[in-house]
Amino acid sequence: MPHVDIMSVALGAGLTGVLGWAAINDVRVRKIPNRAVLAVVVLYLIWTIVHRGHDLPPDAAAGAIALVVGYGLYAAGMVGAGDSKLFAATTLFAGVTLLPAFAVATALAGGVMAVGSIASRPRRALVMMTLKGEGDDGRGIPYGVAIAVGGISVVWLRICGIAHPFAELLP
Image (cartoon, rainbow, N blue to C red; front, side, top):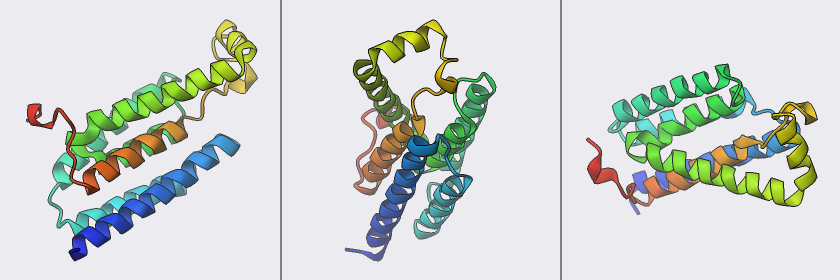
């Protein structure tokens, strides 16, 4: 196995660990540490060095898109600041090519969590809908878990060389 492949796997394992830590922290205390977001960015910078900056421009563009959209969602009160920062940082690993896959994987994981939450506690779900999400201290689903699932999925797709199914349609 070439050196770059071993480094990619090591960085993928590191990212998996950091995203797991962020997800667990989000579940436990409903906060994603800035250190976790910074660690994702540092891992991406190492990734870029290992891969000689080959995908840096499209990856940075994807991260910028995610940051702008995430900030808009945060400003609208739809997501937490930690969620939007973690999503934007993790998008660097997805790049433009895997950004749709990352968004879909994250949304599907969040949907599964929402259905599970409703199924496990239907009364709480009814109260939350009645109060328009403002009850229970405004706590909804810890979306850091969904972001971690989406991020882990796409980084391993990228490491394994599996492109997004619609990659050939992208410019």
